[in-house]
Image (cartoon, rainbow, N blue to C red; front, top):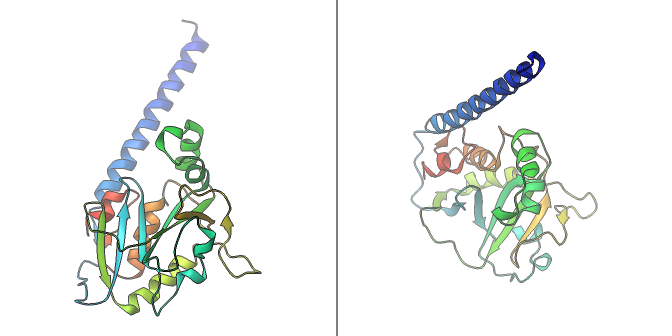
Length: 229
């Protein structure tokens, strides 16, 4: 093999090994740091506001009451902007995601390499995925309830609102029209940049840290969040 070609092969091999090492360190770091708790002494109130952390196996949402004395979410994410959502929908879910990934891949079989590469490795634009639920979510392995106080909810609401981009004229979140998956969801423009160290699950985890409940120190995967529920 000619020397120039050997050098190219050598450097490609180093690049492959380095990339695999970075991925391995990231995964090991995520799971190990995900076992480190914050707010470890937190005790949930006996009575309060039930909210949920809901996972699809990869991505987590924060699910809160549609209407409460603290906020009426129908004033911001209007049910009439959705396909078939009643004014009496009990809960509303919020999830941050990478814009191209979220909007163009409603199912995993539609995922492309370029979309996945940009979503994971490059800082990119994000969106808020909002879903209305007609009934209170049920508890399960992937749907965990947290009971919080009104004071905690008053801390969580600004965190959720501050993630949206707002229209200066309507004072409502900027809707992405005709991008929904089903009759009860919509996408809105969001402010944060999405990248390897700030994922959808990091966003949920930061919200939980904001209200001082027990959660992971860092959790780019859903497992670190659900572990403490």
